[in-house]
Length: 265
Image 1 (cartoon, rainbow, N blue to C red):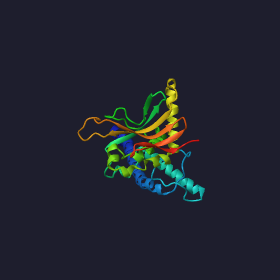
Image 2: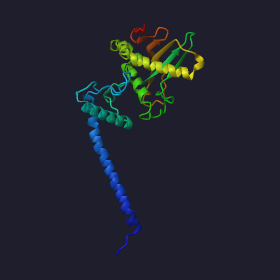
Image 3: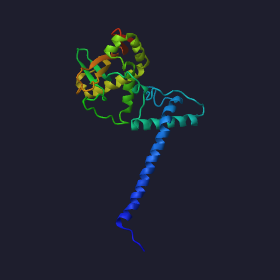
Image 4: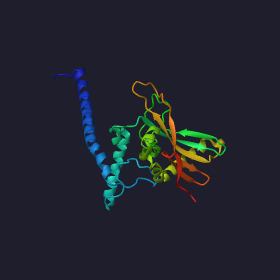
């Protein structure tokens, strides 16, 4: 009766692990082949808003509403969409056609919140997503701070291409920016209220500001061969919340003035 050598004994477990690995890779490939078209097609299936009214829309391409009166079918589609969204965020496979189209802007845009006080003082809090080290920015971990990120992204979309140079060159393309603020006024108020609450908790000795301003920061992208960010950051207001009368104004970036979009009684 022949005996197996130590190398032959080890071959069995190795062979099993290789088969498991190969099977896992195959299943992953099959899943990706299913996921990619499904994640795009689900956008055409109307889904109801997930969460409270002020919940930001995570997928701007997703059609909203209901496609059937059969609740189990509608809910199944929404659960499927949630699962696909989860995998998209977890694996960093978010897609936007602007990523592949020509003419992407030569800058990054982040929002910031400015607090102004009645005595002339002011203080600005940067977005938690704006990297302090702009030469070697860290990677944003998936599924963490997802809700604030979606709020901020939707405040950036209307002015993503609206650098000072582009506004001066194509003013008619950006005249509707105040209407974007008007459409998102509830979300903007909720976001500024949240930022004000956090600011007061972190700085109780500074008192309550009289105005809160949501603004954009344009950070030029280095050209090929440039080391670091050599060009200065430019800032511009987007929305203005005055606490004394609870009014909200939008900044008209063409005429360079604030326009009232909502006044509270």
